[in-house]
Length: 308
Image (cartoon, rainbow, N blue to C red; front, side, top):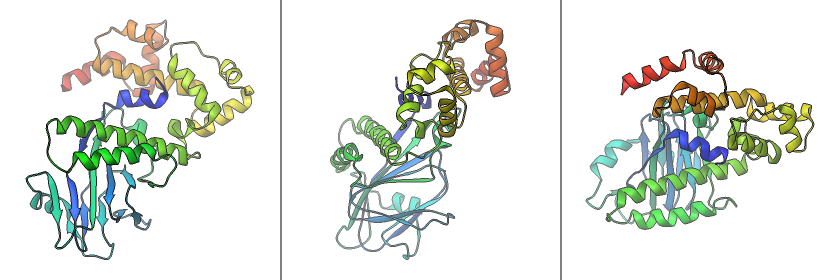
């Protein structure tokens, strides 16, 4: 798989598409702190979004725009930021109709929006959350938003009424939205650090893909640099600047991340896991794992199994 797909497979994403929100008249809603990631999309009209306590001004969302909220802080949506704030959770609970739509405010509907929640495996969430800005906004006019526009049409149809298989469709649509918001952010943010930003660099992205496709291989820096057409020095410098780690340290960290997931979710013995991530010696694997995570592989496995 490619690096982004690799990370998604470890995140164990749980997606929920929330109620459709149809609002009339002026409105402003505040929502409390949350876990991991929220998203919102505008089906009709426009609205403002901002994060409470952040100095950045509110951002206007037009029809077809999507946003991603990533830092867990309380946030607000409004037809006008100057309108008196209401408790969003209470409004949703008290205005939810039998057809699954939240209708709020008198008069003709001016704004229709949808939203959802993504929760990730706690041990792996930092792979994504640590390198995303608190608020990601993707415009419908963005050249990389075509798939999001298609997803919005499906969401529009899916949230108009309650139909059989709604829960399965909702989760699938939410996952499509998340991947495509990240793709659009990736395309628009070539200067981002971390593996997500590095994927957009033709040469470093190619090196990351090779490492992910064959992480157990005994990669040498000279070999990776040659394969992407760079000198050893230039490759190391650019890789570190974009990813935040030297190439071989990144490889080690990725191997240990995969090993940690295997220890948590699988039943292979330590020798098999060590071999799968590129270590012929179980002792070397164990010492590397302990150096990175502060405990031995066997202790980590015992700890996570006892929590279940």
